[in-house]
Length: 113
Length: 114
Image (cartoon, rainbow over all chains, first blue to last red):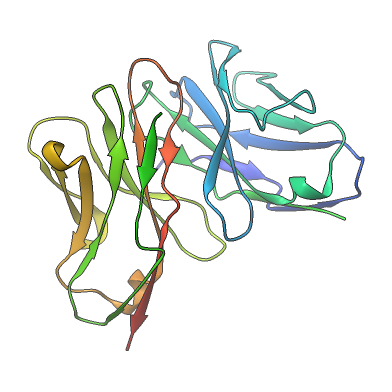
């Protein structure tokens, strides 16, 4: 069964460092998303991406964040200068059609120390 | 504003008992509705979805949900809970027009007593 894969599963980084979280969406999907979940809290929308550009982004997705689809398979989230409050589980998701079921990866747990 | 409300933060049921998790949404457009389950330390797995048609939808693991437009609700049910159902359950809503995102509720953590 096709699935969304994310790497790494865990990442520990020092405050101020750049991190890149990687995702391989399901191959025939066209819409891509990043969400985050701070420990014990709700799943928060960060950004959606379609046709090689950002479709929508939340207030959380400030200038420190960027997304890219560098090739036909990968979808990345970059945090330029990490803060302690960026510590969270980051989920990538993809959907074939806008608004229909999104499939989520297993997440990357980011810890900023 | 678009929102999803899950009024129960925690629910505890005995194994074999029935389960109903509540979800209410506020959405201007025709909503697409979902339930996801998250086991500890895991990702979000889609349990079921509603787009249109029959308002009672069946999902995986014996779950079902009923869409009630008049009550803006999409409650999740299971007739007999298994210990392995202990997890966090998230209701979510989306649409094919307007926004490009899925809006999640705050989740309901289910505990199952043996």
